[in-house]
Amino acid sequence: MTRLVDLSQNIYEGMGVYPGHLKTVTFQHATHEETAPRFDSGFSFQTLGFMLNDNGPTHVDSFSHLDPAPDAETIDQMDLDLFFGPALCLDVSHVTPHTDITAEHLDAALDASGLDLVAGDMCFFYTATFDRHHGSPEYLTEFAGLGETAAEWIVERGIKTFGVDSPTPDNPASTSYPTHMMCRREHITHYENLVLTEVVDRRFTFVGFPLKVIGAHGGPTRAVALLDDRPGGGPVI
Image (tube, rainbow, N blue to C red):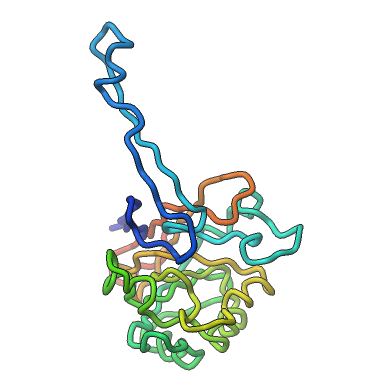
């Protein structure tokens, strides 16, 4: 049986966003009471207004977010193939917060998963940050991040796109952000603020198309996994 799994965080006022980013704001723009007098059939409508940072909720970074080069692509210019494909999720939730996830950690996680990783796959890293801390200030600070050797592991393995269930793939204690620097150099993008609970140590098809905002440096995304729950089931393409 194939099923859809939502990998996206809720969007609401007061949600945790990376420090310094625009906070999420929501407001009632029009109400049924306000719009009903415009119609004589009993019809009415209501709408919600909101403001989001392009790198605020569950989102994917554009190359222009990572790379100051004038020709670095904004989110609307990036190839749609980067946001879709066969994927797997590795469990690195045992790594201590404020420390680096290393290539050795990733090798061990891949071995423990029993999964195969092939060039062109998307790969996601479960740190359990969302499960442990969502809705609290600790969500923004208490997690491990991919260190330099882990960043190079992504390149060496030929991973197309990757993602994490935390506000950044880098160690929050880092002041050099080697994973973002690798992404700048290699033009490999990534998702942040995912919910990966149901796909740990699984293969699946990832679908995460960002909003097509002209000139944006990231794309808020409704990320979804297509899972085949039959024994031996894998990506659903």
